[in-house]
Length: 363
Figure (tube, rainbow, N blue to C red):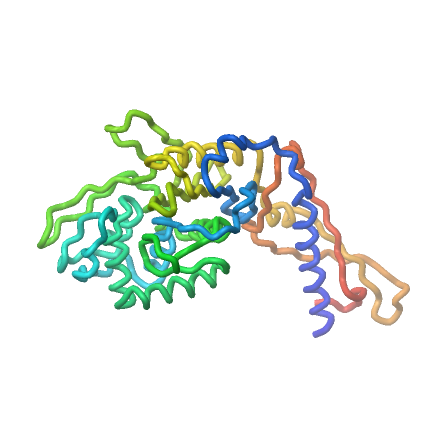
């Protein structure tokens, strides 16, 4: 058993060495446009596969109001707890909204599916849809908030706290840009959520209490209404969620895919009327990351290599030979590197380390 354990340690060591080798201490990427980025309170851009932070503001750990980007977490809990086809009868309390609340026009007592409500929440940012899901799943806002905070801790959002499912300003409802980046990376693993948030328009079907409702995405990187004089559409956009309140300013968690590269840009605290700068900043951060950084598969490269380790004879430690380690590393084990450091033809090397010398026999 001990010999098998030593072999496992050797494999783990190989993996850890690759991580340290491929993350440069100082990025060789070009300087950022600080003038543009100063037009919001907090920002960050990360790789959605590796979770690597490509660039961030100095304030990325400050507590902020997330506005409706909160609904990313609400949608994740709904997908965890429900089937998309589950029927939801709209609780009357879900239709009682404060002044200025965004809504998708739910009617008390009508019945929709969980899928319809997630579309209503993620596209048009319906606070009524978020409340309807919360009441359906937990019976009360406080009980649903407990689920939100439990999930946030599971994701690693250690500096955030949620008090409601929609994101309206509340002293007990706050996040950090860093935590929201963790949420964005986590959300990228929910294929149905990403599909929904990448949809420009959706029709909520007619019910016994309402005609069908056409809703459109508030994400102007994804969809520009005909009435807009300026288009901020970005062709690689795949989601995810916008937000805006008096306290939060204009916000967006924007995801994009270009080839096999996936990124998430986060912008919080845009003070402009309508949050115009968030579209420009998010698009800039996504383009900067695509143009200057590449995510490569460690697993794919390791599995194509012949990895050898020194091994001592069980009876005579002075006699050594080499054995081939059979590696089976997941191809989604990846790392993000700036292009200058990576170069045109990156070379992968390895080093096997063990606490004590490997000895025969090794299983």
